[in-house]
Amino acid sequence: MAAVDRLADCLGGETGALLRREAHTVAELRLRCGQKTRLCRLDGTELAGPVLDAAALHRIIRRLCGDSLYAFEEELKQGYFTAQGGLRVGVCGRISVRSGAIQSVSEVASLCIRIPREIRGCGDALARRLFTKGLSSALILSPPGMGKTTLLRDLIRIASESGWNVAVADERRELAACWEGIPQMDVGPRTDVMDGCPKALALPLLIRACAPQLLAADEIGDAADAKALLDARRCGAAVLATAHAAGFADAKRRESLAAVLREGVFDRMVLLGPQLGRVHAIYDCVSGEEIEC
Image (tube, one colour):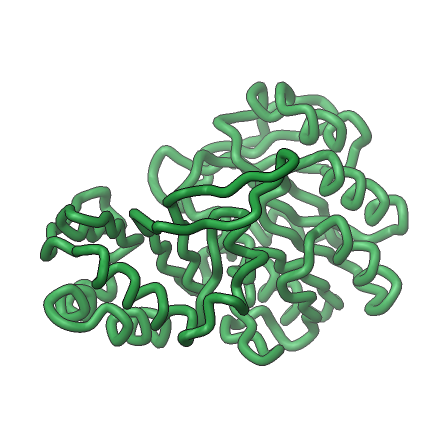
């Protein structure tokens, strides 16, 4: 796992060695100034590492950024940045706000580093439900940390390998983990990726530039994302997307998701949990009825 190896190099010392030993079990790292390192495993258990001081935490950030925090300035305004290999680094510290918008993050006190995983075949069963009779549009829901991005990535690969042209709006740079424009994750041979661009801007650009049969986007969040998905669907492309929600009823209470559900953007809604990566239920978005998994 190249991303884990690079992260271990950035961490160094005892923490890096611990990460290498647990490379196949780790889901995320929690680094807090003055506290022990917390390595969170896929099964929900934790391992404790050494205490990190402020100097060590700042050294790790610089290494992850390639000694160029400036290059990640815009991402940091959203509370995170994505390092090489698709490592998503959540950042907490002192926030400077002006006119209602975050200007900078300083005096960093903690990091939450999520480890990307490529699990080929995890989407096979769902793909048979979505792609057997052409392309169906689907919204994948779950609380955070249930494997939505990993499942979506594999569905993209499967659709691409099946002969469809796929376009990915990879705003958070986690789906394809592009480095110098080249996907580091396997998203298939017929997939085009718009890397680091907000979904509301990327989706219409992809429609015009790449004429995709399937569009994919991770973590639909606001009204602008929802409108871009609706416009893409009206242009004739199928859509795959993910969002945070505990279930169908919860999704319908979220304003942005309620809009796309009401307008018929998705054919199916897929709910993950309570176990990591498990499809708990599939719903027909027109009738709202559960479909047998």
